[in-house]
Image (cartoon, rainbow, N blue to C red; front, side, top):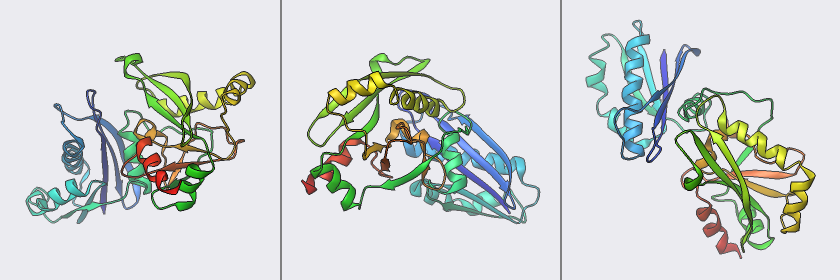
Length: 275
């Protein structure tokens, strides 16, 4: 069986990319990162382009495979291609081709997602931690709403970003207010594991006694805090619901996210009900 896992990352105002992984009988044949052609207007256009590119990879790697499966994590895009399956099959006599939805956190799809972030999959010596969805977690939302737990996340700073680098601002806030927003991290675009390297720099800073002292003077509490994965840091998400954190592993904390709406506003809006 030939399998192709494809995903895309839509970047408004910037180049968008497709990530693909190809396997035959469970053995990996190919990984790639490819720029989305033309100028896509939204995420769906990117996912449709990813599926089109996946078909081109089937043309390249198929050697009479009787079963071909193309996976993507967009239900809309998959549905569109399921309607075209018989037409596509005409290119591959003797083969049956299926287009299937798969959640992003599944292993090979997560790899395709990482590849679509404009860098090859990068293995860091830093360990990963479990990612928890806060969508239906009353304990997490109540903890943030009532107990004043600190939430850490990164925010892109457009006015400090260029064609060659992206600048992130570290935000630390509670339900009530922002405690710190004056630490900036410029990251060079491209290259292996750029977001992971940014996280490693953050972990060093958050282990620096001077920086720690400054944060604590502002009321920041690192222990039992939360690191929120947003669109800006989705590249830290690995396989099987694991992710790299921006907080040192020596500090007790949890990594949280929402699979659909990854904005900080969504988190605090949901937590508002538990005040």
